Image 1 (cartoon, rainbow, N blue to C red):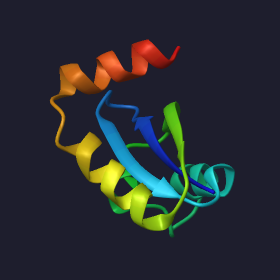
Image 2 (spheres, rainbow, N blue to C red):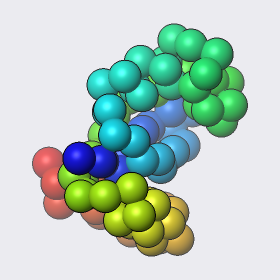
Image 3 (cartoon, helix red, strand yellow):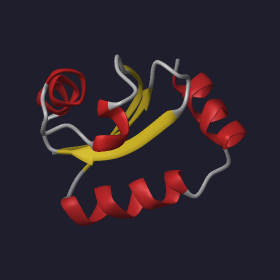
Length: 82
């Protein structure tokens, strides 16, 4: 099972990614050098949204679709999930 996720960085920007282990990936973003460069310089990051998807292909496709949303649309997506 894969997930797409949205992180809110310390500077309030949003980061979108996908993974097959959300807990491990969140730890990487906040603590390790293997986290994405974007989040590494904007720590700490907070998980504000996640969505399960079945396969890696579906995860990549959904991640791209969410990345194409405007910031306001991303914030609306986050609000609807809460």
